[in-house]
Length: 303
Length: 255
Image (tube, rainbow over all chains, first blue to last red; front, side, top):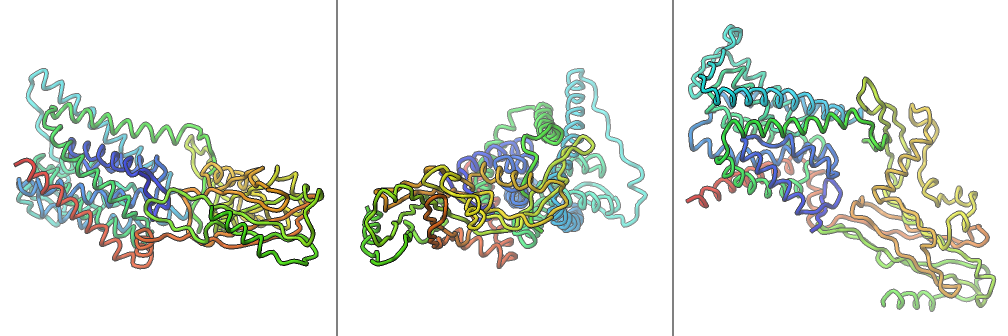
């Protein structure tokens, strides 16, 4: 069934969008990430203009992170205070990001920036994740004890200390704020929630307990993506409601299926699988940048 | 059938006594509404040659060209170049006026029925319909950019040329059908009909076709542009509710 998207101004097959939403929802349910890093490139691939893909992707992530965070709230695995500090940083980052996005859109370099961000962050995160999970898997086979995590000393020297009870931390508010800014910026530019950066940053930079990391990350992603959606809607008019609705509908169903599937696979194997998917997307985008394109010309935005 | 009834009406309406040959035409519809399930549309253009005498062998040399043109807009064409091993957009050329949609149908191969001078005057062929004025960009070779713009538009299905697309019936009537794709832009589309002999334009006829989003599409588009804050808030609210609903539904199912 073809459906006309009012903002993207083109007609696409509704079942393709539902399927995409479902597939990515399934991955996000399995791995506890939003899946924005897959959604935005896929939307661009099926012909949705990049600006619309980024803005609508953010809107869809609001739904999937709300659906995820409610479960964590019931299990009390959300550090709301930490989430608020991250969200304040996130708000600053999104405003900055949407502004940068508008600017680059006028310069015609938005594609390049989005691609470079993807290659860089997916490459680094995917590589680290793969390395870590392979090592964890080997350790588990050898039966040795897991190494204790190191805490960074310099973080404790910063002012503005706050007590985060749920995370059992007493640290300065500056590092979580900066992590928030970073993720907000990326969310606006890449159309992603930033969970794949947020989660490692919380564990390794802030030293938060793993149990509360996913819930808290989802909690702040709701605010960042909601704000990003609003900013893109008001500044670029690029949120497509019909596209978002189809993706959300497919996504929430997929997420439940994925969550059910995820319990059956071992955590390390799950992480290796996710790392491989992340790296595959990274390599695909990197190749597109480096290989000679079949068409050198393209239409750009008019100033 | 209504097409032929309308044709008959057109014929009956022919006033007598005109000295030269004239062309009159009509479209199968005055307006195209883009609904949520819009997948494109076919527009029939039909008409007749009006003349004071009876048609004879001279009229075998008549030809007809029909064009439909979407709203004109300025466009930017960018070219990628390899910089430090990465392909990035470098040069760009601004095309002052490019129709968002353009279709030409002729009763024969275009340049066999149309002279280049007439093409320049009436901007009939796709090359002429697009206007690049002066040194609009910093590019060394603006012509390449125009060619690229046409190539991109053709492959997107918004520019098309159909030699032999117009059928002339009995030296007097003609008809053609032009397909509008699903990725249409809103606006007033101009349909033009040219009557030619010996590659010279004898007469022309023009009418407009309104293309508008309707219903839900209209509502969402207007809301997004005129009440963008409200639209953004609604988008977020829908997402919040959908996320909450899914979580609740899953909980109920698990019980």
